[in-house]
Image (cartoon, rainbow over all chains, first blue to last red; front, top):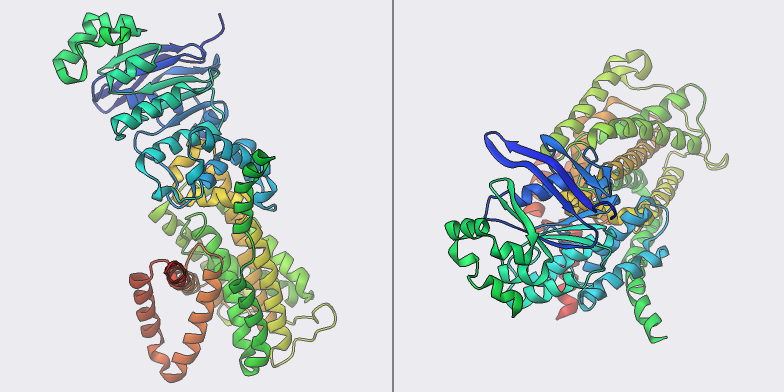
Length: 262
Length: 329
């Protein structure tokens, strides 16, 4: 079996007395769709911040394709294929959708280092950006300023920016946050349609979406990984049920195992 | 076939954005016309061209990369003294003087950029201010080199291209300043429409997002800071060569502040903002100070407050908004 696409070994992070992550060991095999779930404050976003280098861990290592990337700054991790999106839109308000994605493509292809040639001298980059926008059905609004896009379109643009970097591992922090239900299913369908060469981990609170789109699930509680397993195993796990029943009854559908069949 | 056509549409759209607009051509023709229209104001016109170039260089970092500087005069002064010292010690050839000034300012810009690229916002304003004050005080204390308070004496600029003599009326000076400004403008324009220019806009729009798309923001900032410093150096050298004097004014904090005011008046982040700002600022100063010199800063203060409150994107930004509203209705 090949090396995991992404692995964390003994990751730990504390903010003062608050333990945000403690002894986290996970392995994401190539091409798998992972969901990262857990109650608010469980440390899910912290884990993404640690793995992408936005935060420095107090202890532990991060391996991308078996290479230790713990010491690399965020932009170099992106260059190696570890890419994230944000829970709250973090976009370029006064760039058009096409300009934003072209910017990301140019950074990847290193065209962004050139200041003596016009952007239109890089048709390959522009076409690639356009193709990404097409694949997410954003082509009709590609010349609109980002801030003028509908909220759901901005969520898709987040993903488009990530795709422009040609990720190997994609970490999506609540990709459907704030998107109405019918649109969030569509958004997840787009994620499910991504190439199988990309390993995906997403944070999501909607259990129906989690069980529908994840092949495996990681449950975090209080900065620790409680359990990892297939959707089936997680739905049947009594500890998981206890966590969710103890915190927020409404979030864990009682019929979760049933959903798997229906 | 249809697919190929569709695919090239975004390319054409982006190319069209970089095309020369009629207003742009009109601006440069008008600048050239000032020869005929204001023959008595040519020295003012050269000053405007030089200040415009200085403001353009500031626009590259403030307006495009979001790096606010309150010490940009350091590079202007460096260029001014480089050209002045060269000339004083026997080399008054103007074009090579410009190149030397650009080199000197660029090298210092590059060296300081390693610190600059690590900071944002208020810390950055204080840092650039600090560098500016440092350099001004250094020039003041190195009297044997810079002439201190008295300025540099004995500067003589040779004939331009060994042909055009720098005359008393400022014909050559204005032509020279305008031509250099135009070349610098073409350069800046190309840079803004390049992939690198797009990255600068990305840095301005969302600095924190840039690493997440794999962008080495710090190296981008170092590049543009160096380029902006070199252009400011050219502007400073032009002032030295056309006036044949250099004084500590060229490094003064008030020069850093003035150029920021010009940029804000005209509109940052639109290439012409600095040029239009320089025209308004210097013409207004010329007119107002003719009426009541002591009140000059009162009027510029009033203008600044009015523009910032009413036209947050500067005068050009206001005009652009007006134009788009007009074309829509």
